[in-house]
Image 1 (tube, rainbow, N blue to C red):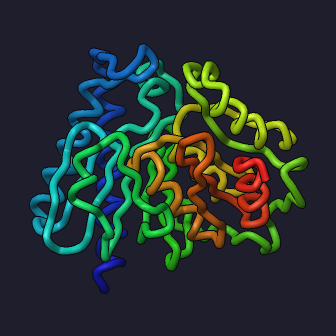
Image 2 (tube, rainbow, N blue to C red):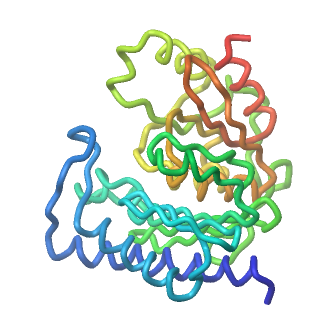
Length: 280
């Protein structure tokens, strides 16, 4: 078994155990704290799940770098970095919605810049550098794994690639469903809101569900057609981006309205949305 394959199976085991740990802790009742806003919440389950993942990685991959949503920042020496979101969609999780997951990505030959790595919430690695990701949704017992050179699977079954039989095709944004999110505070920023509307206004419809990794898994599945969001840290972007790349999709980071937006989905839809974001 090569290193990438070994890492992928480790990632799958980590998200499966972390997600089920969080689910079991939720059943016992949660203490909910806020971070940046009333909708940006954290629970003891998030922290316990991250602690489990970090402890396991320190034991099994002691030379690897580790970057986690709940505070872990460890610069390794191996050239591999693990990016952890122990509970992605914590607001949903804390309010007993099913739309949340545990997510992990790993990046081999990692291009992390140590000087920027400490700027946690604003650090953005190029989305296309990710090697593979694993996303587990405990409430539906669904595990996705994949990456740019690893065909994406759902519970072990390969998902159809873009352009293959059995996968919906949308000719343009006017026929597409976009998975996205824009925090209410950004509606007050005219430039960001205008950039957002330039894309959404061209779509058939859109959804805001509150878990980027599950959103991206939905795009990889073909249930939705395109994902778009801005100012997301690596733990929210990389695991799901890997899944989209694993079905032959495109992932593109686009600068617009002074922000970095990440787009993922069918290549032609990504290009159309990128042009709309930039106002081309």
